[in-house]
Amino acid sequence: MSDRYAAHTASLTAPASNGFDITPDDDEDLPEVVRAIYVGGAGDVAAVLREGATLTFANLPAGSLLPVRASRIKATGTTASGLIGLV
Image (cartoon, rainbow, N blue to C red; front, side):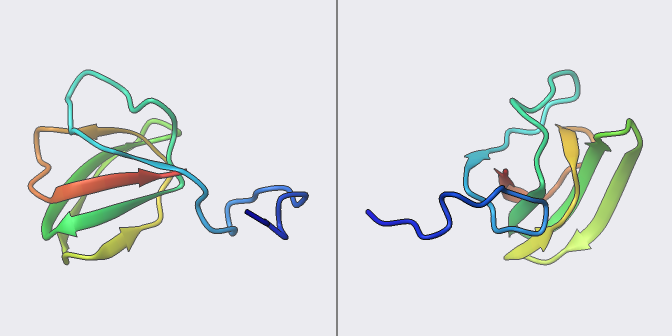
């Protein structure tokens, strides 16, 4: 398949080119730092950001995109479901 942008350098403002399901865990980091999180089911997301801050994003609606560089999504405090890490 043709990809006219294959020679362009990916940046944080470019669309995601890969992703993975996120299972919240209080102790384990994500396989890689994400550029955004897709929230499939409404709720809260407790995230550890790349620089170490832990923040809870409350009342996120289903189908929203959370544009944060997160290294971990904590089980404690996360009520949202269907989370997908975008990289």
